[in-house]
Image 1 (tube, rainbow, N blue to C red):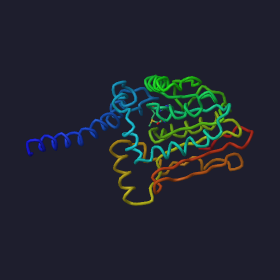
Image 2: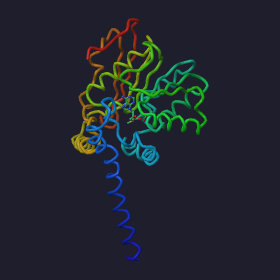
Image 3: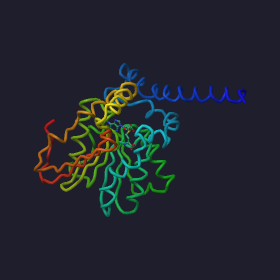
Image 4: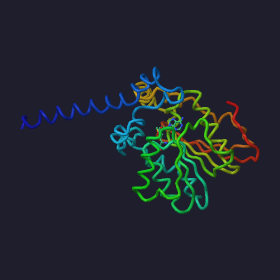
Length: 267
Ligand SMILES: C[S@@+](CC[C@H](N)C(=O)[O-])C[C@H]1O[C@@H](n2cnc3c(N)ncnc32)[C@H](O)[C@@H]1O
């Protein structure tokens, strides 16, 4: 019995230690390397999004579920809900697609009914997400773009909906503001922007966990605890609703553009 148990325990311990180590190298450690050698606009992009091998390795639903403390499906429903309830002939933009799982759900919901635009800074992610949609037969009607969401090539007032699922926490300070302003700029009057993100938890235990996780893996994420640009918007033009999930650990923010004039936030 011990002959069997010892290697099993050793293998489990090695896996338990190896997974966070590989994740650390693919996220935080890559930032250190790119801060010295990367292009100014994409130094914040982890290896996990650059390398096809790492994309293949980390494109697992259980990893996203674990990072989002098993709230993945609930958060997807909350972010996608308004857009999927009103999709007939609508044009929606997803800002950043990562491995294409949220995109696949969005594309399935809009399939043959509306137009989906997907925008991401990494060509590797755009290709991966596009292939995933094709494999699920929901690629038709979706357009993919590669570029920096801080300066998108779409004219002002292009989209009925803009959605963004856990992008802001990976952007360094000022880039958060620029991407937020772009998401608002491309919305039509009457359009709605919804994003899901981390938020400062209510309990001290969850705050401790968040601090530890962000400190080790995601250095820009803690800014989400105080970053709330919607507070600076003109309430005559923007209707804002913010909902928190899991004791405040996550937030879903919905911004509806009511005015005709082009409203830019004073950030
Ligand atoms: C944590 S993921 C975002 C999650 C994703 N929205 C989803 O559907 O699950 C990070 C993604 O954001 C992209 N990204 C990071 N900075 C960006 C930028 N400035 N403009 C566009 N995409 C960006 C990365 O390439 C990567 O695919």
